Amino acid sequence: MKNIMKRAKDFPVQKLAIIFGLLAMIIFFSFASSNFFTPSNINNILLSTMINGVLACGAIFVIVTGGIDVSIGTSMSFVSVMLGVFITWWGIPAPLGILLGMLLGGFIGLLNGIMVTKMNITPFIATLGMQMITSGLAIVITNGSPIYFNTVDGYQDICLGFPFGLSGASDYAVNNGVLIMFALAVVFGVILAKTIFGRYLYAIGNSREATRLSGIRVEFWELLAYIVAGTMSAVAAVLMTSRMNTAYPATGSGYEMNAVAACVIGGASLAGGKGSMKGAILGAFIMSILTNGLKLLSIPTEWQKVLTGLIIIVAVFLDMAGKKKNQA
Image 1: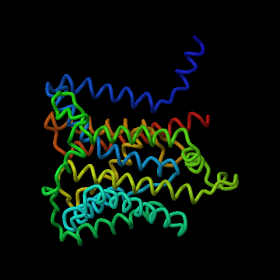
Image 2: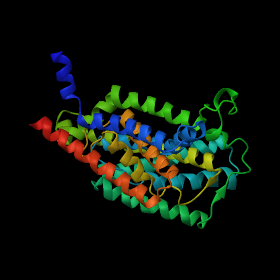
Image 3: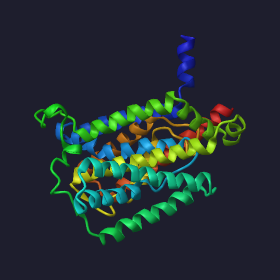
């Protein structure tokens, strides 16, 4: 009994708040709207979580090092546009065009990492600059107009198709895009939690100088974290263009903060050294459920943003409170 009480006492307050908050939202919206727990709405929640979830898969790698990447949203826009250029304008086969898009996303992450690790630019400033560059290039290349993928056979199936030829026969069939998000979360979750790469990232976030003095190549591993974030923005671009069947030059605006918010709500600390993949995905689901439920209740978008902001503030406050408790 004493062991149970001790474990309950040591269980992080923030994790309890996340779990109870998610359950409370689900219960509330289920009673508040009869349309909440319908198969079609559950599918909407999954699809709306998909992009934030994939971006959060990359963002969490940077956040645990104590850095931040605010360019992942506009990088997604830029890669989306370039996918349109590769596949529809230049006629490159879709698989090769997607591969080029992935390499481009990784290259953007590499540039961010070089600015942070080699040029010693603050992560926020470095990635803010990249945000402006990618946002501007996306508009310049397209002249502000969308690029359509209507002529590309099967492109929408990447996201909206169903595995094993189910063709949506079941109301509860899950789209390919959602399955891709979960698969990435599992793979990168294992990498973050169980491999040397992940352990080094946590060590850098906890104490950069101590990690350096222990002989670990801090700059190299931090660089890899930004490459992962950039690559995940490219994956998100593929899923977004596949879902919309269109590449919009400004489609990623604001997504970077949603991804960061998902990580923070899920228990990550912006100071570094703390966070998990399951927490980031859970945070993405919390944001999607909140937005979806408020839309069903016809709450204006402005108030949705206010509530999301309040949740982020509470999440950070609980994180700080937990740290003070551990220090005491």
